[in-house]
Image (cartoon, rainbow, N blue to C red):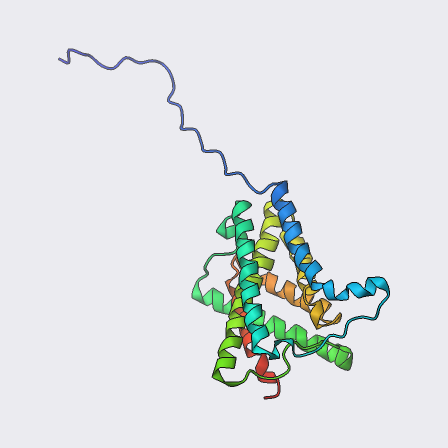
Length: 248
């Protein structure tokens, strides 16, 4: 016989453990930072066009901006700095890796969506070129192939950098924050695509709608798979192979 006896019953029901509150999401300050970040980039892109506001002639846009290896190197550094700023803003907005698409995909699905994205980019470019013909006046940033192994290595470095940076910044952070704030993801993709096109004004006014269309094509695999990897790989492949269609 147990001298202490059975434990006394209190009659109280056991209480479930309290659920932890959800982590705070992005607020108005994060949205303000998003707006400042993106529109600062657009403003910088349009600085050469400020004389138009004073009634002066439009600036002459010279092709071959990236023919100079020094400009390619500067573009690589600028891309990584932009990505660093965006990463800090992602952290401050408490966005998750899933929010911004920094997640992996099974190999088969990754290859499928990368191929579809490349096909979409090539197809839209071919369709617009056929429709507009010589009226598609785009100032090409690259007018000849890179020179030698070092030149190609530098160019492929830019292709990889632009794929990682532009997809992380434009599609990942650009769409991810708006979606977390309650915006429709497809509507956010359209808005960010317009911003993406606007940043390419250095290639002429005709490049803006073309690059906006490409910006939406890049967004499709992110919205359908939740991962930036297909768009990043497609971006890098298209940029990396672009010099092959140019004169040597």
